[in-house]
Length: 224
Image (tube, rainbow, N blue to C red; front, side):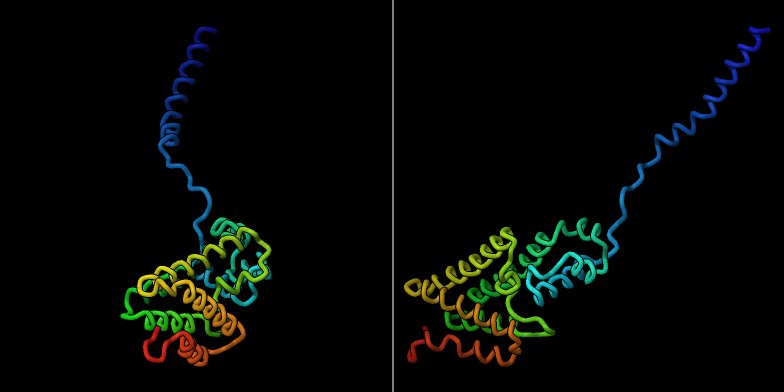
């Protein structure tokens, strides 16, 4: 009798194992579950909101709460998308810097004379820096004023040097004997335009200033 019970028990275990096998095999073949959730917001739009805040308040006076409120996201989503406030600002500043450099390099490639190129650069800067919709000035020059983050400050200093270097290279093609003088002068004008835009000067007025800005450097008989 004991032997019969043992045989029945072995058969039952074997049948159970055969029933479980498809389940185990199916589980092994099932794709792994995706971790986390896809980002539910437009990062480009979010960066535009952040850029507006940095323009209005500068770097130091923008908090994480300000950023997440403007973007309508929570802190974990912010960190997942941008890393931290400093990395976000640098990302925004780099895009802005690239646009400035494109204007400068394009002017030296497209304009037939040095005066025309410099005038194009100044007029473009006036349009970009003029006060519009509560924003004004150059993000590179203004938004990090009195910035307490040493890494951000160093990064923006490199951006300013890149702008000066682009001017230097362009001017040196046709006026190597005056390249330092003219580069310094244009950088000074850009800083002045930025301050005027920050203080609320509109496009038309700042464009008029830009149009006259190079006259002191121009020879009456031969422009630059």
